[in-house]
Amino acid sequence: MSNATRHEGNPRHRRHADYLYARGEITYEAAYLDERLYRVLGRFPAVGIAPKRKELLGVRLEQLRSSVKACPGNALLRELVGRLAAVIGARNDLMHSFALTGGAFRFDATAPNGVGRTYFSVADIERVRDGLMAASAVADMILGYSRCSSVPGDPDQAEYLELLGRVHAESDSLFTGLIDVLRNLGGHDERQLRLEGVGTLRGLLGELVKTWPRESKSLEVLLGRTEEVNRLRNHIVHSWPVEGHPYKLVSAGSGFFDVADREDLQLLAVELRQLWVLADNIVKDNAKNGGSLVPSYAQGSSVLRF
Image (cartoon, rainbow, N blue to C red):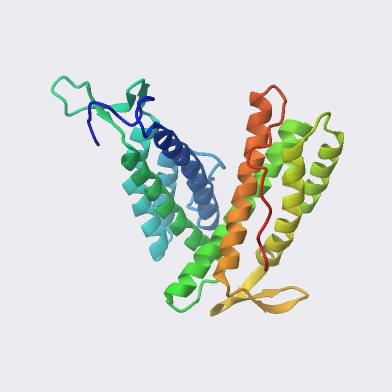
């Protein structure tokens, strides 16, 4: 870690905005990875472990190690454990560091008096972010392979399966985001909401938009964009890859169809995540502003084309 006289965490540093942005990315990427690991552990459970939806990454690491013992032949699980183990120390140093005007720092145990300060730079934060993203990519691939286990070892197909897993995981995140909006703004019971499908949640969201006592552009955007995205999401989530040929999916009532265009899957995954961010910000902004919705992340239209 760098130890300069002036640090990028200092508000007067010319790269302070980049520093804050990078730290924000770490927060999202860690939450993103935690959700992925929860899904992976659900597919590859270890004896005596019942993973919770939100957990410390250190606990996730130990749970994954137990899953590797239960599934010793799964190379991707072992890779996921390795990538998480490689980044978790730096991530914890960063997220649990002390914040001072001069920038966030951690105590340096190697210093003569034990109180030396090791500051973080933008590059340090970006390396942690990249490590978290790399672990998430492996988790996405595991989720994709769990949908179609017997495929040739083709890198292109591996990329497809990673994207397929990402669509499934992002879909779950959006589902949780809609529940959070309805629970916090509409007073609905979370347990009951989790028994419903996305279509039902959209219906409840539509009622919330109609009855909300003031202008709610964010809610309207969330409702409108979710309609199209959910249609495309159903096209994928409720289908299964043809064994040995992951570019073809089979859907009840519609037979076979091709989803060979990985760009479409990428766009769908991005749109799903953007909607989760929108739902998350609706809840946060509403609480922060005393119940006043702020249309953050509400601009833009879908470019999905399937």
